[in-house]
Image: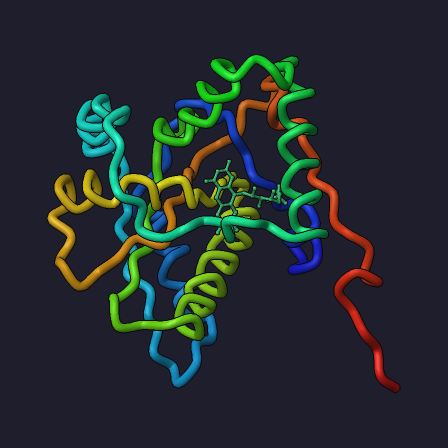
Length: 218
Ligand SMILES: Cc1cc2nc3c(=O)[nH]c(=O)nc-3n(C[C@H](O)[C@H](O)[C@H](O)COP(=O)(O)O)c2cc1C
């Protein structure tokens, strides 16, 4: 698969089949993803891979997910400006329209959001942690790693959904995985094979036109 095909065909999947994936395959993709660039070659990513029986244990452990925890960070700025605000709003509307969930059906919207904590049914997942001393440049390196992994997964026919939602569950993660004090969660990722029948997977997210983010000097 060409890189451009992987980039164009990758999308976030939010309903998975329970078809298992070999851990060895995922380890191999993670090793290749570690060729991602990072400032100063710090390679600041710490990846916890979850699969097989441990995934079942984790899902049982997370049954208590409703108890609130202090989030690791604010996922969005509190007063999201334009044009970001509209992009976020449009994504939500497009997704809930596909699912036939109306704006006032808060319970159904919440239930869908909570599916994050079931990895949307995926059989495997990863968590990306970063040392507490690292700043924005290193957090951007994490993004490099994660996108490279997602594209490699795409090449293998494996679907993914990055999940910042896990920033709401730092204490649960720390307890279950005995995460050392100095590591903070950046995000999780659901990994598996998509349920092609699921309506939510028909979502094709928009992109703003380049005039909103590109200035050309030539
Ligand atoms: C770092 C990161 C975290 C994300 N967190 C979540 C999440 O918690 N839940 C979710 O459903 N989607 C999450 N997404 C998916 C985005 O909503 C998605 O990438 C965006 O809408 C563009 O759609 P696409 O990935 O299908 O191209 C996340 C994406 C990224 C890059």
